[in-house]
Length: 224
Image (tube, rainbow, N blue to C red; front, side):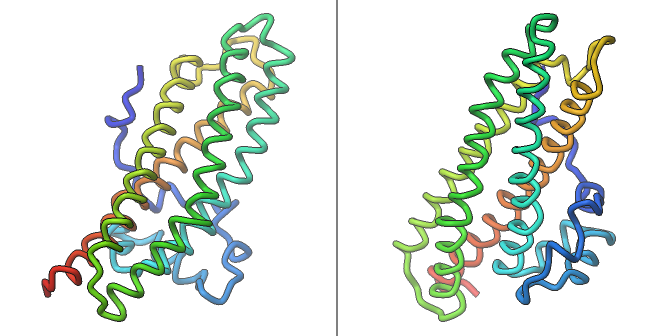
């Protein structure tokens, strides 16, 4: 069984190095500069560099890279999942289970992304501006933010549990000798999605959320 907690910490430049989704087209809005992001993610001490960026920048970056990647690829992968299960589940029973789990996983993942974009991220921006930028000390707002973040982190843990199940079902994505191109492509795309989600959740849990809470606690308590 794969323990996601033992996965090595992924270097940001390796995880975002796929130019298929890290392109200027993703960053066509005025609030994000594509060159700045590329420089931030391809140099030394990448995690340190991400710590230097403010909340708005990180939210824009996560939304325009990892959320976009997840939205696009969950549709592609689920279509592949159904196709492979339909064609080969009579020979490989694990594919039927894979297809069943995938339905719930992708539904949950899509809902996670929407909740962040429609609820958590706007709330985070609002709280940052009121507590930090305008100097308003509001412990109730901070506690509300903490609760929303904790709920989202629980969703991240749920996603990792799904990923464990996929690895168990597929013996760590080992394609059988008679696997067709679609079968092998499904496993490769799932590994790529797992890779991206690991970085995605790391950026949120260990940089965006952590820094937002730390900065706001300083404002609320008056620590300088």
